[in-house]
Amino acid sequence: MKIEQMNNNRVYLSGTVESVPTYSHETFGEAFYEVMLLVPRLSNHLDRVPVTVSEKLLTGGRFDIGKYVCIKGQFRSYNKLENEKSKLMLTVFVREICDFEEDMNPNVIEITGYICKEPTYRTTPFNREICDVLIAVNRAYNKSDYLPCIAWGRNAKYVSELTVGTKVNIVGRIQSREYQKHNESGEVLTRVAYEVSINKIIEEKQEGIILEGEA
Image (cartoon, rainbow, N blue to C red; front, side, top):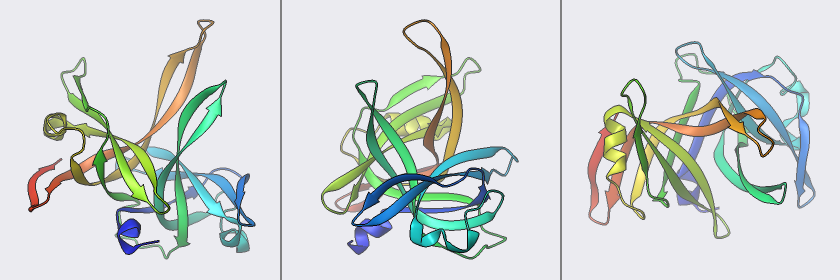
């Protein structure tokens, strides 16, 4: 993998293992497992972040339930077929286990990518500004990860004015949130969405960085 593709998608998480590692898939004879990690916010709220980890990193009980683990990796997306419909799935792919740093924010993501869908700007009933934007981040072998991001306050207005194809640098955190959805029978289902909550965003152009927004 090229250095640029390593640096355009970087995640640091530290949290408590919530679930038993469950087999996900195999690539070139190497098995990968899915784990749910509970990651604290400064507000003491917990984000439930899905993590994909190689069997090679499961040794020594590192991912036993209740263990506190620190990881570095990349936030990735893939399409999964559910009820004959394609669904975008998100997970943190673990590249390495790292040492715990007490002064380190437990949830940091830095990505560089391109706006690939028109941003959606709205306000809440309490008049808080929000903007949703989908970012395409290049990966090796001509693949891309499509990462939903959300901006708040003055960042929301800033993002809403950016156009499809704009290259941006984003710093934030990975958050989980519950929402309700009605199925075809009218039943209300509780689902969990994962997204990047933007703290800082910088627009890039060929001549360099020209505009910046920060929470």
